[in-house]
Length: 216
Image 1 (cartoon, rainbow, N blue to C red):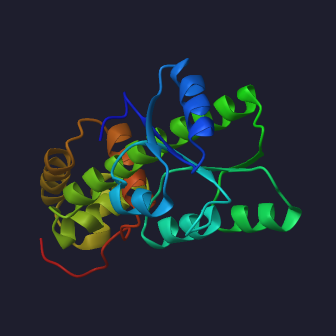
Image 2: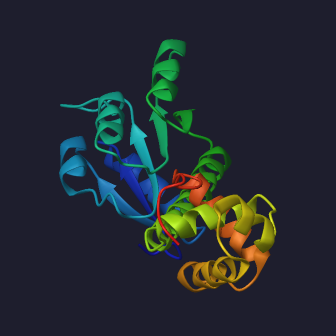
């Protein structure tokens, strides 16, 4: 993944449209991949790439709405901007329901397309960065023992080492040892960093305290 150089996928069977949009996107420094056929796109698209998909609604073999639905079923997370020369309210509704981020009519306004694509790029980069933070948090959390997870939850709740010791039936020195291990395993040095790390764990869907199981 290279968030510094996002890739915009243009999926449209009209070569003139693809060429014109590619020139427009190139004016703001964006790289563009051309796809004249929706099936070729589905077969060759790198789902790990960072960027935005600009997808025409009316194409032979597969409609843009069908392609969008297949992308979402396959777990693709790239923002999708839909284009159509014959838009209807129902078509727009179906596109947004299927996960489109924007729906624009042809001939598309240059400023509107650039805004939609650039917003999509920013959103996708930020989402991938959050995912990376979540993965790192889960990997670090997996190193904690059940007791360390209990101590972590109580530290974040604002309890002192003595209060945690009473709550868990441990000595204060043992709690301090666990806190030191937390700092090493989660790679944090301050309480504020520990709390932020815990928040990342919660956002990543990890359990909060790990229960009362485990030993000192």
